[in-house]
Image (tube, rainbow, N blue to C red):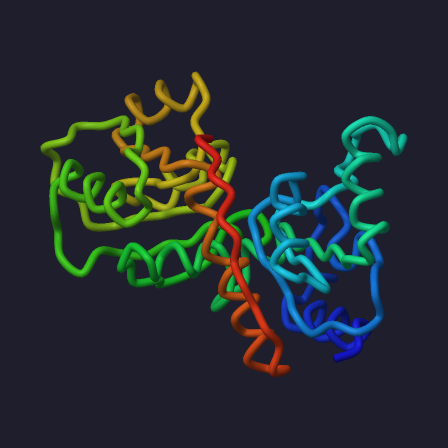
Amino acid sequence: MELKQLVNYTRQILQVERFNDYCPNGLQVEGRSHVKKIITGVSASMDFLEAAKMAGADAVLVHHGYFWRNEDACVVGLKRNRIKFLLDNEINLLAYHLPLDAHPELGNNAQLGKKLGLNVEAYSGNQGLIAKGSLSCSQTLRNFANHIGSQLERVPLVVGDLSRSIKSVAWCTGGAQGYLADAIELGVDVFISGEISEQTVHLARESGVAYISAGHYATERYGIKALGAHLANQFELAHEFIDIDNPV
């Protein structure tokens, strides 16, 4: 398919214009004009780019691309090496950040909820980035944390009484520990995100709302994979997800 068609369709379904983001969403580096195979991944690291080339990528779709707000705009060093690699190999780089987090079906939050078996009831908070839902039945925080670890293949960090019974849950993937205060206002039993800060511990303890840090990378593997599968099905493209392990 034509690159322009892929870019326009993806921009439309993710409603990119709705979001005030920290980076440009869409085509960040232009390569060849015709796309037959797309490779998806969380971040456009050099390891990922090299693996994508070996897999025969015409385009790579990622959640974490380039050109972040307030970073040095000069194309030097590691940034230069990555962009040169894409240009030399005529590989397109498309990146979708907040629009991918928030999409109600393909997004990171929606897909994490599906992975964990959570029933989504509503999206709220800043730009609709916080998902709220519930477990099918009450269980202890310990059992729920073990379930998360099993599903994500990552032992989560848990702040809260492990023996406490929980049912209502809010979550936002990635580095969204700053939304814990919003989750407290929602009146949930537990909030899940990817990372944790020093102050997060105190806020969780004092509020009584448990906090689970399940990994930035681990919580954001599923949205970009779902988007790639959707595009492949929509346009009869080849698609492959490449998992570059990241302990964060």
